[in-house]
Image (tube, rainbow, N blue to C red):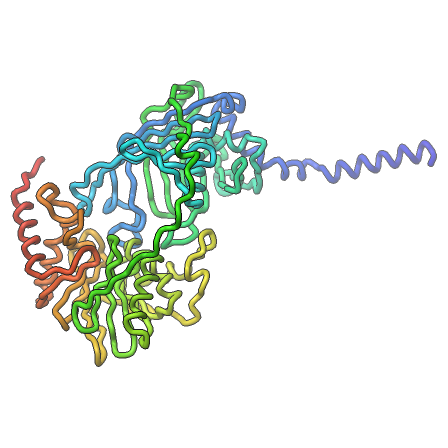
Length: 521
């Protein structure tokens, strides 16, 4: 090859290299990193972000019980709000440790009189643990819960951007979405991926999004939005954190104090936590069935949520589906009671998640008819269609081949055949849930309710806690009277089977205590 040819060949190789690594290509490769760099600059600069050793955040706010609103379209709203006090989050950024503390008290009638309780959660690297009121620490073993705790550690711009700057983090999918720029961040030394979004104008981190699992909703996008930035020790940090489960409001926190490099004490996991061994799996739920009238059983499982099994001429029905484990156990007990009659019908008292999280489990075992108030028809359809890939549930593992029919109840509905009659009535004027049904059995003159009367439950009417869950006992009595029902016994979802006279006495005491309660202006 001549010298001229060699020079020409070198030029061609250079041109080819420039074509392969053009500004457009480089820009595409660096777009994800640029989002992180811009976020770091907005907070105070890369060096300052990486130099911070501790972060202390204190505030107050509100939390909303997801799945507990008065209607299914308002799962995060004032009907289920808790006041959050003593919100304190301490971070040791150099060791990836944190401790999250808060107390909360209910601001709605269902938990009126609830004594504020303090919760303390902590994480040390990949070890998550909880600290009880007596100071004892208990390790968290559930892998999903540990992963959520790791994400919670990064639910602040400073901790999130620090993680994204770590060489061990993997950045990908830099993109523009509306007025934001986004990047996916696989957290260092982890399989967890979150999405960081920054404001295209200010470059401030605007939110973090991650995928999690909530039993009755399955795969769900959880978002914490950052707002109202202020200057703290030369850095810009947010003073408002708002979290949503998809479109539903979950928490709204106002930060009143925060400091950098303050003394946060030791956040290391105690030796007993680090040396703890994984406990044995819990024992299967033990189910008992008490026949309260011919073809009607009160299903007791030793926990807070009972059920009911009902025998029709050619099939069985159950009432409520609290969660997968208890629903499957209740289905099995109903099949055991009458092996020749399939369990095909599920009656739902209302939409709250602790009464519907087992709907999919029931369908996986052969339920083809759901009976509920008409206002949750679309909600039940959504439950059945939502993906459960993060934590595959019973229906994801065992899809139901038969279509599911949803029977709507308006004001009342009668389910009847030659063997059984069940009357369903809409509960009027109930702020707790605008979707509530009560279930009446003319045979035996028995009434089943959920969340309105709690005989022998710790949350029911007591001298020390005259409100409690019994706040709606009076409402239930009014609805029974309005419907002119002849009731001899109460068979509640929460609590024991009791004579109707005992319920009436509780309602009368409640009325008396309410009338004696002084009002304040």
